[in-house]
Amino acid sequence: MVKVEITTQKENEVKLKIEMDKLKVNSNLDKVYNDTSYKIKIPGFRKGRIPKNILNLHLGKEYFYEKTAEKLIPECYLEAINKNNIQPINQPEIKVIQIEEDKPLIFEATVQVKPEVKLGSFDKISIQKEDIKVTDSDIENEIIRIQENLAQLKVVKDRKVKEGDFLVVDSEGYIEGKVVEGSKVKKQIIQLGKNMPPEFNKKLVGCSAGDKKEIKVLVPKDVKDKKIAGKEIIYKVKVIEIKEKELPELNEDFVKTVGNYKTLDDFKKDIKDKLEKQIETVNKNNYERKLLEKVTDICEVKVPKVLIEREMEYMMKSLEDDLKSKGLSLQDYYKSIKTDDEKVKKEYEIVAEKRIKQELVLDKISQVENLQVTEKEVKDKIKILAKEMKQDPLKVEATFKKNNNLDGLKESIKREKVINFLNKQIKTINSKKEDKSK
Image 1 (cartoon, one colour):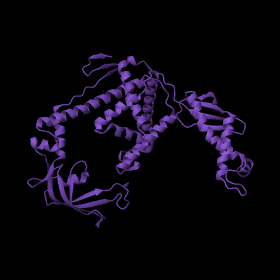
Image 2: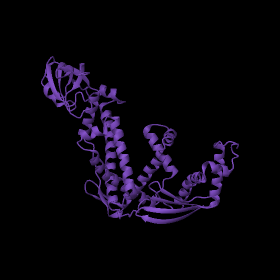
Image 3: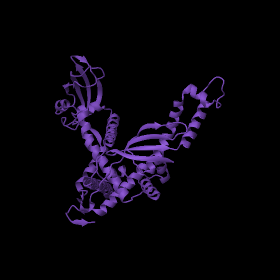
Image 4: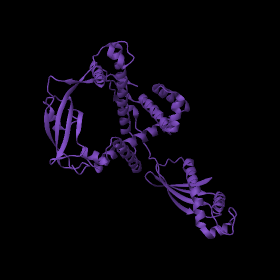
């Protein structure tokens, strides 16, 4: 049993003076002495039989007091915050006031806590719902995309090169008349367009098979390879063949190769159904984004700096990991978008504060409205996910547990419950401006 005295230091920060009974201190101190007597070797004494005074002589009393405090402080602190319903947002700063035999343990813990959130009046919010529809053009574009993925390259002999063509080329680079190491390629396929250096597009469009061209490219000064940085490379290119994509004909034979379809109409209907599901998700996400933005705007809360900094660290780490997966460094990315670390962090700080404020507001709503997540709701959600993934629910649940993601799943369910609650409080207007009061 601990005694706790709470004083507010400043905004979102409290100081706890925590006291643990001396009997608990003594029993833990005895255990530390006993454990140490088994670990230490002292001539003339058997392990586990070393008297306290001898241990104190070799290691000093302070050593045993410190070890006892290290054991007791975490559990005392945890009991104190749970007992007083304190929600810390960072690790506490601990200051030991007293730790001695036959005396209570006394220490102070200074910690930042969740800020107070003042909720607004949700019934004053109105939101226009978007109602994006799937068009014939959307279906046609998706069909073309599928055809493009299954297209074959055919040799073109009756015309010159145009943008978008695929060229089979031999190429080699030179700097000041000397071959650039590793630049020689034979029968390489390149596609003219936005992914090629503009110098290549300019020189090769209008060529014929068999033509030879010299293409000058100035290498940026900041490239990693210092041997070529800032220098002009002359590529000697020979066009071997011109190729273009040949789309497969859209007929029943084609649709049978891309799925379990009997007719062209079945194929088009399936595409429409899939696009409608995607659009439904887009509409839902756009609506929820607007809803949460408006809800957050009418609520008052001062976001602690420690939470903003933590979110920024997470965002920066996510950015670096994403760039790393693409083979890019943070500095390369900054150069490509003409920015720097300071500018990015300023932008991230604004986003981080909005994110944290939104989470604090949603958490407050769930507390006020007592929106709890039951085990049945978790099981039901796992069944839905398992059905979508075509997996066994037990396997999906095991994966969540293995990856320690069950708490995240519970939070997402709670978020859904908060959004459902808000939907009943606000007014929505459909895209035709018809008022639908809820």
